[in-house]
Image 1: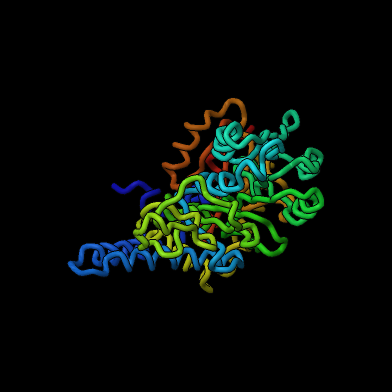
Image 2 (image 1 turned 120 degrees about the vertical axis):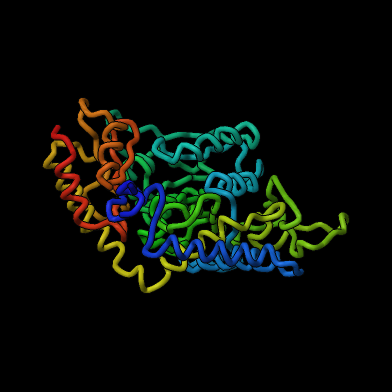
Length: 379
């Protein structure tokens, strides 16, 4: 017998973790089948399809965030993309100054920056959350942001509260301080519109895994071309960092003049092949209305949490919230037991500690709210 979650995606509330779109399984399978046929064909073009599929995803990403095609690059994940950027800034731009980040950032970025701190000579300044606060406010972040901040890392939408930062306001403050501005848009990319030019920022990264409905292993980044100069050399370089990857003359190595310098060794293909259909869907007319559908369900989830007596951790104002609704479970509820119970009825959520995370997308139906209403315990 099939488990309800195996056949019915109407209860999928995990878009903050893994995104889905209508027809995804068939579209991804077709893309992977095409790759398999191309890669296993006994001819000299097997690399061409993989490189073209990877480039197509980069072009789709550039279109999504209004970036020039030559200003985007690929990586394995967001942490890797940020590490390449920060490493290339080097001691010249960072030593003796602060790198600012909020305590409710995605932890992996903090771990990476802590590791680079002694190497590049900066001080990592983590703005703490106020006692019992669900998220960092823009005012609190700005209060720690002075002229000695070389780089500020902004989390556009947090993974623990779906709190949405006012990037326009933060960028204006950062420019006044003379800081570089990097934005992690992972939890917002796809469900919210983002334009790297409005406001202009220096670096942006995401993964395709969540609202972009892609596969793990597909990190995407944008770098302001004005930053690229002879001093901005990635710490790790390889044959694909060159203007012509097929240069074999060791004495003629040089970095590509654009974002391609952040490529390294032989690039991976499969994650990009598997992620192409999701990006294509997001950029198609079929995705129109996704945010409106998300908001309608999010309003019902907030009302349900209130009715059950749960403390809502996410902002209630739509403009201050990403695509998720997160709430604190009562003390008497075991989070993992609740996840299992809901999954048996085709409702998929996850928890972080005592916080339940719910993110409705295009495949989620209004019926899931009725199921949740019946299954969630009262506070």
